[in-house]
Length: 237
Image 1 (spheres, rainbow, N blue to C red):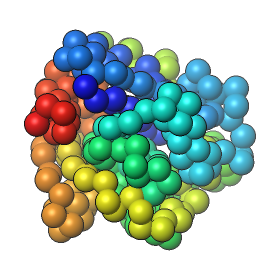
Image 2: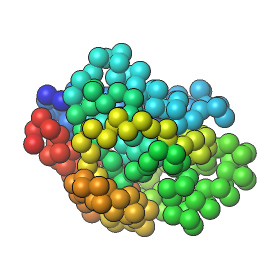
Image 3: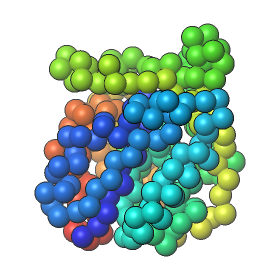
Image 4: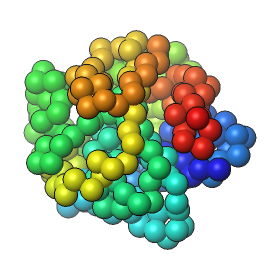
């Protein structure tokens, strides 16, 4: 048995994994899907000081509190930065890193610098305007590849603004996390913002898998995603 820890991306909460969690538990695994500080059900903790380091500490504290071992740490989108930061802090607790259509960052790199220039420009404009200089307003679900009306209706009311500092604070790494095996999963049925990160992962020799769905795979293709996660999990490979 492994312990899966599923990390949501920007604007989401742990609830985003509701369609995947039962499938992993049915296969006999322990599963945690925490909400990061300042988002969703923890939006009451939102402040300009919430940054990448805050979210890394969220996950480190969770794993230490549960004394979790052999963890498969899955990060979606923005949370790729969190996965990398956590792996650098506590590599001995991790068995596998999984980057689900996510940032693959290096030491000194911030999330905003890892986005395509045009997309990064949209983020900066929205932060400077409706984001009051410290929030990233919720992005259009259609842009993210969510087209099914029932999925839009389920997601849209639950999304909350995301703290900008998490995208501008760079990773500070020692290199310890490189000892943890990593895989990349790219979602291909949308604008493929993370294609360059799939290529970066491949260049590092990581296995790269694809899912024919939009960016929100945990919502739009939960069974396929769960099957892939079980496939790459060291305990079931």
